[in-house]
Image (tube, rainbow, N blue to C red):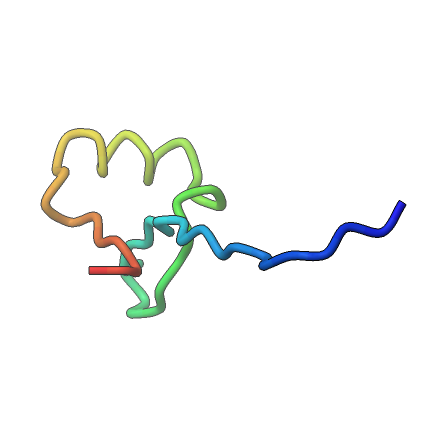
Length: 50
């Protein structure tokens, strides 16, 4: 089955934060301690599309 048309791109927000070492890390790879800290301090979380 061959479908012709326009393939749409849907932007997805990627949430990242800066670690203590100064590198950026995706929220999906955060450890339990990092997730607890970020939940207590939501201003530290940055979205990639912002």
